[in-house]
Image (tube, rainbow, N blue to C red; front, side):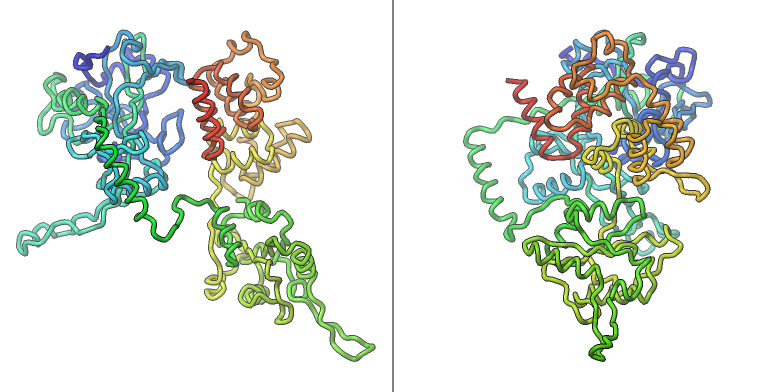
Length: 632
């Protein structure tokens, strides 16, 4: 279907969403619909705890969306963010989830796959949807300010110019939504300053601006292919997401159900239809390309006069950089966040000193009376002897002294530790070796009743790293540390939701450390019901149900012990769970495993690729090379 002008965009009806004529797509996926970052930027309101049933991430947050049915009294029907039926004034705002009739999706687009939900998914048209991550946004902004981004010549909503960068398309927008919100890049953006009470009258009298001035935050949003789900019975392609927020359905008018006469109909089949047509950047002539490349070369020479390296850094990068720079590091975070594990990644033989249990003698050494000479002899602490011996044995390596639970120590012990950090010497007598480094760690004040406030001079002697174990980081750690595949698969399948549960002091709760303990218990006993002693009854019951699914293990795949009949018998949830578990494959196993996952469907291979790479550049390169070879 190359002639897109024949398409007539519409919205779903009240009956198709909430009535007896509810279409299969809504019956299967529910009445909640995820909202794009661009829709939030346009004015859509979302809450961090209101999601669709299938996606608990920031991209899965739902918003209210217009239906095309009249609701009586001149109003219009809509679906609320929580999925219930609602009514809106025609001048109220809500999200737009377009749909259109289609007899054959394959005639419309070459990109037709089967979605995890079981419906055919079609990629058709392009539209700004989700914010670029912090690192990419930084690159885009630098290129934009240097004048190196090429415009495609297209503008969305007649306002946002589209730029080409590394074969992808982006728009640059100031965050001007009427309320604060977190976008899918994880950043929370502030709303512009609002109107002061009484400022309108003041403005009329003094000719001053009504609005407070505020520096707007810049957002880079990728213009990506729009994904539509096909409801075969209804003959409809329905947008997977709410693409944009509309400030009105038919501004200032009542609605009698005649959809073709509304401003919404004109918007769908005018501005939106035009914006959905992908841009085709004009090819540069040979002369233009030569001039462009020369300009890029000159700009590259000027852009980084200090020879710095830009880009996002991890917590481990900062810890390692501080250690190499001989700067003491303070790790903050709850007791279960793996602070000592991060230090051991850098120095597996680090000397750990638990300051909560330390005494003046164990930390600072002691003096004893020598009866033979009548003199006092100073004896260094045991930890110092060990560190000195390691540093002398391996002078080309850094060795870490790790002061753990430092804010749980008595103030007198903290003072002794402060002197070691400040002067790099113990008790004023024994210097730390040149290749010794100091790292400290402490729990957040709200997480420990025994925590003591760190004095400002002590606090300011450290580089501070605030440990935050995200689902992605935990899965990467779990894969590298041989966490039981059933636990890995369960956490990945539930998108990290069971990784932590609330601590009450009465029942066991889940946290990253508890899951490591659970893995050891599961390897040893093979009895998942035993985990209730570690992570609690509720999560254990759910984990047991998950384990009772028919899934295929990594060992079975590597042994070739899976028949086509077994594969065909698996439902979507079981295939998804299997994909999660198989993403633990190492680089030697990956080729075999990826080929197997492809047999379950290309959509599962895409999930596998995302989980297996998990942001690792080396693994992403391996996948790219495999795809390149497959295309040759």
